[in-house]
Image 1: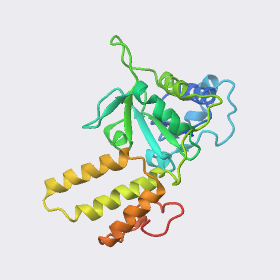
Image 2 (image 1 turned 45 degrees about the horizontal axis):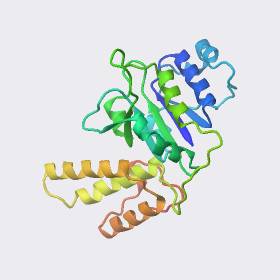
Image 3 (image 1 turned 30 degrees about the vertical axis):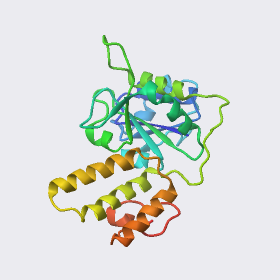
Image 4 (image 1 turned 30 degrees about the horizontal axis):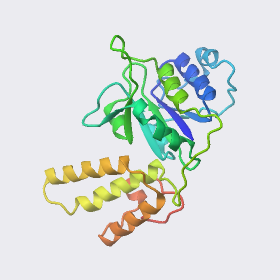
Length: 251
């Protein structure tokens, strides 16, 4: 499954055209995180540009934070033209085949995340995502319209009649479960190193590994068991995170 997440969207016309695009190249979900105006979806421009789309209540949920929009997602890709910190940014055509495969897997929910029309994703938002991608453009004009960028990405992932080829024994980790594993690893292993610089290096390494690895529920259980043996007795609530589905404390 694909979930398009638009963060801090400003224009109702862009939002409406994105909604139409999601329906064009579905099945896909569309979620708005912290839109600039709370009535974005009720503005006249939204309905005008979403012409032909059934605008039933709740079809395009609006949530307060990007974290909430990502909570059930098993993988995430942020689209940006700007390099954010030391994050690696890949070319979207190079990623397309493997992302399409994940998006066709019914066990997966792949988040495709776009920032606002003026500034795009900020560094904090980009840091929450597993991968960053750039849509190639000409040198003359590198900035893409938001709804157009959504259309380019979804059209590449659209595969009528395709069936998922992946088979797995474990369930892919949702974003909230992946985040708990990340902070649990940081908390327990970070206590075992001396010096602020060494701890920062370790935490950065953990962040990169957890963000990019194809983790499943069985992987998380194994790591949490090991961390408990090393003295990590914290559960999700201790980190202000929701309890992972289907798991007890510390799993």
